[in-house]
Image 1 (tube, one colour):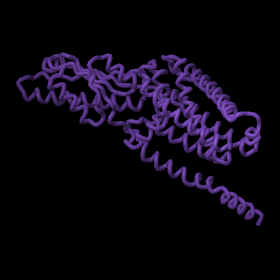
Image 2: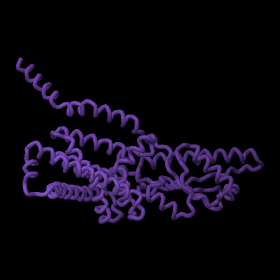
Image 3: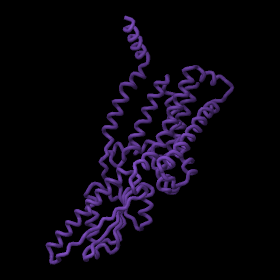
Image 4: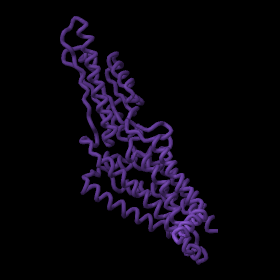
Length: 371
């Protein structure tokens, strides 16, 4: 009977906290639906830039074969090798196809013809799919050319040589892709969860109300809570970079100063999420569950573990709302590619917009909750 009494008490406690019960029951189901629908490791429709110097019928047939394979989306036409490099550096293109000026002449000659396929190998899954598809397509095209030539008067088949080059991570090591992304995930977890839990814990203990009635101004209370969490996050980031470089041999090719500066923009948005969560939750378990709800989709839908190119379009639209999606491109661009602010800007300005909007709304809601 005593055991039944304790169990009944717990059920009553759950009834008094319907929000916690709702979060416990429905958050896993919602996340299961999102992840089951969005996660796909079969990468297709890779954004591709083409630099066709031949402009011949044979080159057009080859490009049509690339497009029809469903692995390559020929989105960009470059006018120079430098433009190909720029589009791959910024991440707008994952693959570059370079066709030389004498492609058609060599293909009709006896020596064979070669094209260059450049793959952004910073994501090994994307690189593997692109390299395998390009190699198989080159072999298929060579066999087709051989059949055409054997049907003609010529007896010597000509080969098509698809030369694949992997940039940034030629050995396709998973650590070079995963570890920089984990730094972004750690920063997000620290700034959201710790910020939300710290505020809610003070509200539970009654110390937040004591601060409100003290001579401290509202902005002083907020700044006093934000700055320590920001410094902790920077300390965590520094230790993570040291471990990444010296333990996992992750190269740091770009500017550390630029990385730290852009990280402040990212953390402004995640701190805003943490503040907003603290205004919704009334208990620490609620704060942790709501933080979990904000963090987990960001980890799985941002490109941290699974390539965005393999996700359906609705999931990709959702990923564009998440600030960590842009921060992962930034940190990998600085660490692995060594690119600068001019190339990173397409991913920086969404962080600025998101940070300003969510931080402002969260601060206003937090101040209202204090009144």
